[in-house]
Length: 353
Ligand code: NCD
Ligand code: ZN
Image 1 (cartoon, rainbow, N blue to C red):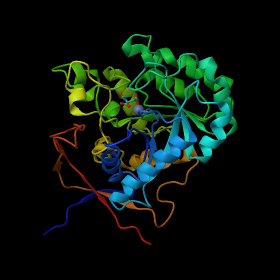
Image 2: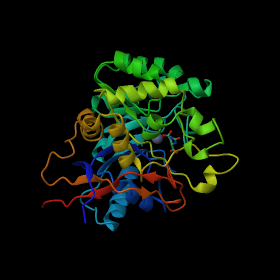
Image 3: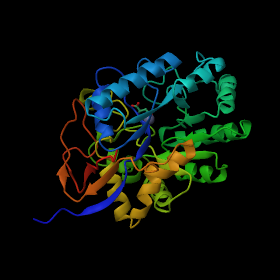
Image 4: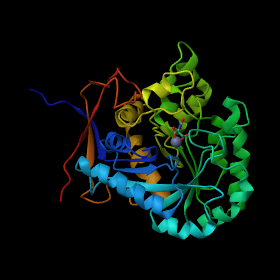
């Protein structure tokens, strides 16, 4: 018997934007991502939201416990965020950092799932952001102006990002899940302390995949998929190894009845398939060597964390060339590419102790 070919073996990577939710489903969502990723930046738009040091301590304990169930107790590392709001005092920032926050997340009010308590007046957040700058916490931004036309929301918000970059000269900022050439252009004009994440689905899909034929609610997310020229700008940036762009899946699970219905929730669940499909994306783009920097190096460097693979004991993952069919359901959630065949299987390699 011949052994299946291995496309690539890399340190078990990072996902710098994920939704693990709160409560009963958290265990499943943690398992689904922990099979492929070692470290994740967990978003705070849970119900209830993550806003206090106690919230963060509880949340970390829940995630760690969930990871322990599949034997990844020591290895899986959740990085935490808190949600900016007028009820988060600037004086709590040091304690939030101590409780494990590496970033705070700014959601404009009404921009996306669970953002009804988001920020309406950016000026009101200035004392809090000042405290984050002083503590060297990263500001993660959902950069959409919800009052603009849906396809223009990201571009409409860019002047506000520029204002923040100018008003906080030492603040590190991540433009989350960028989707337009406008955002790439803006990113290029900003100093190196401003980075950006890109999702898998915004690299692989455009608006036609959502509404061009039959409606595909499982590709409905915020920011919404854009026109092909924008998709191509993202693809080009990633396949050129853009030094300020790293991976954040924005994997966002919603139960099937909340996606396949009249009032559908925004979010695409990519966690179970993100790593093999990213590998295939880089292979097809003839830039396989770009995979590891995108998911193991640049995000870690930006956040000032050790790179995946920097210790001999860091786990490795191999992408084994064995096609598999994505299950119709992960629990109550329909994953990205459900039912289709993915060319690689993720195999975690033994950790040397
Ligand atoms: C995310 C969610 O469901 O929490 N949804 C989404 O469409 N991306 C929130 C977010 O990151 O915007
Ligand atoms: Zn998100």
